[in-house]
Image (tube, rainbow, N blue to C red; front, side, top):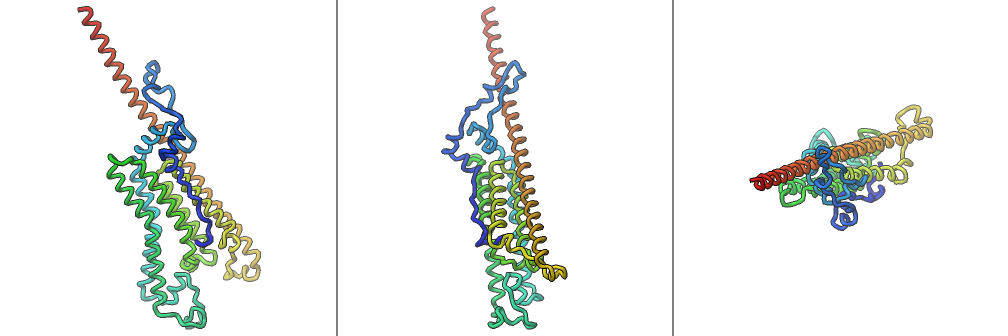
Length: 351
């Protein structure tokens, strides 16, 4: 709920991408796993021991991890684009609402300034911004146009991510598809950092008109909840998703606790008769509710993070099972060929 200039800068954690860099892979590679060597003929060609895994960073065998990520990226490409679409849809709707307000002849310039976040003192004629200077006739249009341009520019990281994802997918036979996952993690984190700065540029304008005195908090929780859903919808590996969840939630918690525009700026709704006479009590209740809704956002992040971990675990188990079956078939084919060769040799010897 803090304003962009006051929100804490994110300590973005590109866990997924960094852990798969060549230098990191050399450090993290603790196993050279071969499915064929771990298939037991005595146990109906099932693997005797699966590849070891880190809790967060995937398989100890980094070549196997890369192979898994390549397959996951291709398999989840539809979900990845849905994640981008969910994230982009928020601002697309916001842009459309601003365009409608800009072009609607029933909304005068002073009202448009209020929507943008310029507080216009109203004296019955609404002729002044600061009660002294008249409102320039083109001020609302120019500021609204600037807001629209900024909203469009804010989409650059996501649009670049969509384009890069599509290009890598098309060239997946030449470029490792796992880069789709790393690019998506990077673009989502870049967008999260950008929005942390951009939220405060609203100056509680449009949200304030709709939601009231504590509008910034409500708008922040609504938008960040959708961002969390977009992260989960993309179907990224747990390491990538965790970086997104933790970064966003830490930004919210730090900004809410110590940032200007955080909990200390929660105020009561003076339009309520009781609060007009008991302001301190209403402020206290509003702060309690603000903390409650922040906890709900954290709970949502924890739930989606847990779901991501369970999905990642199931996907890795399926991958290991499939690779084990392929190895078992290869071992069986090799064994059959060897047996056939031995029988053929014995037959020639008897002849």
